[in-house]
Image (tube, rainbow, N blue to C red; front, side):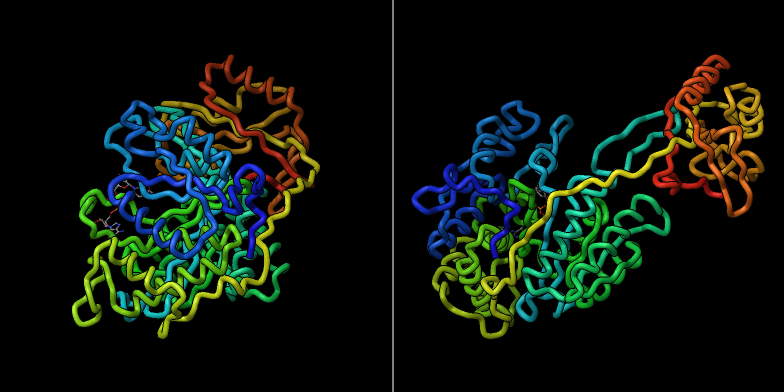
Length: 504
Ligand code: NAD
């Protein structure tokens, strides 16, 4: 199947019928495993033309804190497909993560990590696991928006967006469809984060109904991750947001047996990057003992992505045959199971010898029978009626008695605005707080219209004007309060767009 997520400019990145790809040899074991992978690609007849880019340690050490220079960006921009070996991030402050830079700059929104057990050839407690983690790659707590607001409190903004949810969840279902997978499991924490994770979950439910042939289920991330670790055989495709995905994708890789085996794809609308899941393994670099399987599997994903599925199958089947025939690198070598301990180069040679051969024990790779294209429609924004109904004013206050700040705020005479409540770390402390609640110097003070009536179960938030908010802020400042930030409270189509305080 050919993905139209990548908008190839064919006139620019085709040479003699071959697709030009940007290749980074990486650091540590990178050059060895890349050499093995490229030899296999070449022997298999893959229609690609390699253009090398320099990334990583050497670029960092030239004083470029991002680890990538202009010429590499230009080649990526022209070629759109990157095959990348792991790179070493030098120790010490000031070096930015190249992976995060590449993901964010290139809009690589989906991280796809298939992990399958290779039982009985690679030791694992889970002989039947075959899981694909589809992780959102750009948003969530990884937006990197952090602020220290008071002596006590630093915040990190968790951003979950509707377009972000729609495309990652749709990608997960489309991936399941294209690769003949049967079930997609969504993992969220919407029992706590009702709005952010609630959005992810709601979008999942909306999109799942469009794929009736694929089973869908949702789990809370904590129990979901525990069950994934205990019974990975029960999972097929898992879709989740950035932080949870970061964690569960490492869990599945770890329990599958060897960090050296799995590849991953970072997919964007225009660019896609393929790499092994492991790092540059400096401890074994230059010794011809690294397992190149992770990068080989990444290159198979790359070939499937660019539509060269027959070649992808050919390499995958040869790789499976090599594992079955017992030619194993040191990390997976097992006395009485393996036939021969082979080096990186020799492992690649054994695969090349088997190109065209099918595995006996493992299921054959059948990427060429993929059912369709991975298509992600453009996001269309729906506009909802938005109404300002209040404001949360965050105040840095060094006192400890919530009644003192509450009573003082009640004396501030802003135009028809009243204090509804104060929370500290999300827990209501005024009015009627508990004296046991620990209070920091960070007070969230919720103001609403003076006309608001709050009957049990029927809260009514009348509209507030922005002038009222400005008047309130000016009066608070005048009264000596240290306002550190505000969050406007909106209703969208009459639906509350903000969470209640715990105990509110
Ligand atoms: P690592 O994955 O490089 O190594 C962890 C352990 O696994 C080591 O014992 C290593 O020898 C072994 N290992 C890894 N790949 C192997 C393979 N293919 N065959 C056999 N054994 C293998 O993780 P680390 O030691 O935490 O990180 C080393 C460097 O890699 C760091 O500079 C880190 O920043 C970088 N890193 C890069 C990437 C990337 O480029 N995508 C990802 C992770 C780490």
